[in-house]
Length: 290
Image (cartoon, rainbow, N blue to C red; front, side):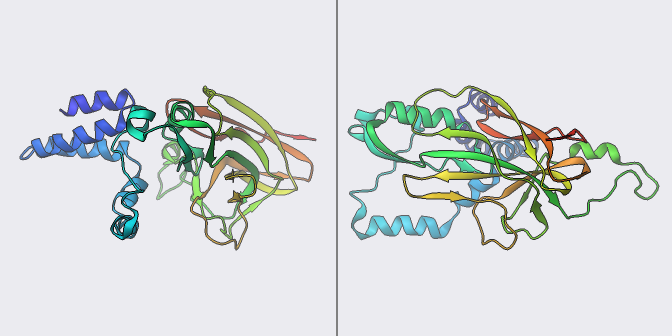
C-alpha cells in the first residue's frame, strides 16, 4: 500500500497518495518502523500550512454554520480533484466564477498552474469572472540587519560545510524593522490567471539599480490584481501591518557595499513540476555602474 502511495505521489496524484498513506498507517499497526517511514513521507509531501487549514476549527465551524442556516442548497463540496471534474456531470454546467487560493509566498506553487489552466479551459464559461485575475512576483535589492554566526570558527571547529544546508530563503514579516530595500521594485514574473495557455518552465534575469548602501540579498514579494479595481501587494515596509504572506529574503554569500546607480543581477526560474517560482540571486560581488 505504501509503495503504491509513493508511485501515486510521483505521478502527481498527491490527494490519492495521501489517502493511501492513511490506509497504510491503519494497516501498519505493530510495525513501528514502517509507520515512521509513512509519517515521514507524508510530512515531507504535505506542506505544514495544510494541516492548519484542515484543523482550523473556526473556519470549519463557520462552514458548518452556513449549512445549518439555510445555505445548504447553495454550498456543495465535491470530493474530487479539480482535474477529475466534469462541468456537466459534476457542476450542472460551466461555472460563472472561479475563486482560487493558488497564492503562496512565491505566488504560485504545488502544481497550481496546471490545475488552474484546466479549470479555466474546461470548467468555466468564456465570460466567467476569475479571482485573482493576475499576479506578479516582484524583487528588490535589500539589507537584512540580522547578524548570522560565522561557522568557520565554532569552539575550535570549522563547521562552514554546514552552511550549504541553510534554506535558500528566509521568510520575514512585511513590517520587519530589520529589513530595508535598496532599489526600486522590479517585476520578475507576471501571470495572467485568466489565460488557458499552458505555461512551461521558464527562466528570466534582470538588473536592479541600487540606491546606495550595503546590500546583502534580494527581497521577493507578490502583487495581486483581484479585478479591475482591487489590488493587493505585500511590499516589505518597516512597521507595515500584518500580511498573510511573508516576504522572502535570498541572502548573498557576502554583503556588498554599493553607491547609488550600481546594478546587481538576479536570475529566477519557474519549476513546472512543482509549479513555484522564486529568485536565485547570483551577485557575489558582480556589480556594475549603470
